Length: 324
Image (cartoon, rainbow, N blue to C red; front, side):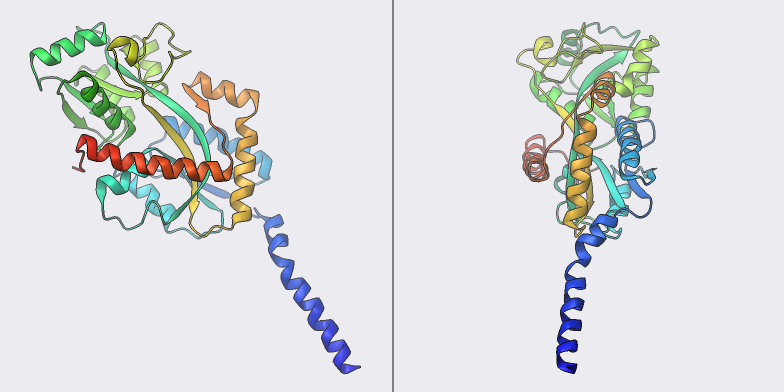
């Protein structure tokens, strides 16, 4: 009898242990979730992180806190998430800059590939080239002609080496065969403000960063980098229209979690984000702010990030970019 009771107790204990994982997964989340944005407040990634975070909070029935940790080309905020517990309670809202870190900077205190797991793609965003409203350039061809007449005289601002604006700027120089001086700044806000104040000749930035100054008559848009004209600014040509053959460049935003985060948690987050991105009001919000929702399955998200990492290595090699 003793042996039989022992066996039954053992079996019940094993069953309890075996069922603990799904029970734990079902309980997640039990406390607030933090999404770190490694860029300043008010930037395009911050805007979308707050929108998605609010909707995610409603779905998961827990507060979702957005924490801006800008600096060092997004390294500071990214390092915070790399060191966080792999429990799903700390996430990274990253841009294409994430896959540029290793090719550009080499040694880091973390590995952008190995220390993170992609969770969900959020959006694709084309950029826009803007000049001061009082600029002598009324079209991209004017700017290109001036740059060819006096090589290296023009300058352009970006949030820093390896930022989407810098990469798009390098693509612009390559496509047109011109040279211009790169002026790295602390963020997108500083870049567009410098252009509006006639301190630099131009910048290439997300439309959300420039739109208030365009509408306020401080900036003049010359061309967009996407495959199609912007719905917000339909009169502005694409780069391919402005300076054939031109080029196409889109940046993206993706959620990451620390490597080792339970797959059940990552799958749940991917599913919930995809549902949010599929809602009509979400699409309207994204498009109103110059982006398109890009939901993907978990497998497709990982494939996408892997492909983008490969492209990043090729791009840095092609343009010869290095950290300053």
